[in-house]
Image 1 (tube, rainbow, N blue to C red):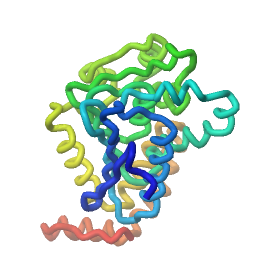
Image 2 (image 1 turned 30 degrees about the horizontal axis):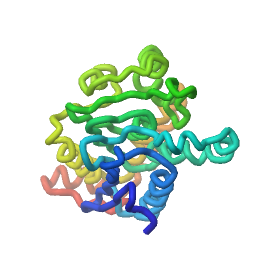
Image 3 (image 1 turned 45 degrees about the vertical axis):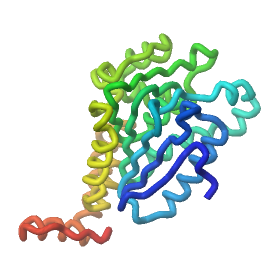
Length: 260
């Protein structure tokens, strides 16, 4: 195990829980943070038992974003050699076939905002504050910020947040669509785990193809989306899990899914 200084990873049943675990350091994103994240992702990929992921944070803040000491040392040569790898670390959550839920409290700035943009569902505590201030430091968001934020909240709001470097609170984040759920701070992790466990209990094929279909619909035309629906439905209607789900519903019992 080569993580533990900045990030913790534990399992609660079929839920994988990643915790940003350097509260004294405001959970800043730096080289070691990113390497630890990659190691956890490798572990997740190798574990076929997981049904959902929750990303949360220890302490009063989710993350204050990039470590400026790390940013100060970055060069154009470094970016040319490493940016695709860095982008893939955040794209991992979008590509993962199981749901990924971000539970956000306190500050969520810059690179941390880009991290949650790659997740499927964002739940904010009522004390959460969001900002994506890269322009202030002479660069634009480069780990999915300009792309995913625009898809999520629209071009006007994305320009306001990125070009204006404006900080918004949890209520405004909910209003513009940056987060999907707003809860009291003390209820944050319980709400995230409840949703994760609910999703993890569904037939894996249904969840996998639904996530892929939604992602495809967000990035392509109607005809491409409908063609994908035809393909996934042909597959899913031949699975044992579908028959088990229907039979269990009719028999008024809890289904037992086998992932096939």
